[in-house]
Length: 108
Picture (tube, rainbow, N blue to C red):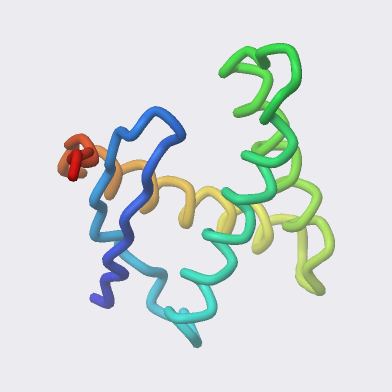
């Protein structure tokens, strides 16, 4: 079982260290990490400096993105939905075991 270590840091300085369990057919863990970083950065840019977005609205948008991306796969509906559910369940289970912390801010 392949794992992808990933560190996410929120704008407030909270840190999540996660060892994501990858799907057995993952081709490039490095590419997965780059995509996660790019998507998180894009979300941050969209949310930054605007009126606050409800967490549920953000999660709903991400879920809709996943559903749309899955629908674009050249496979049957059953295969697409099974794959989408599988990767989400793996990701949620992995985040459940995340280590949480705070970025240290020092002064010179």
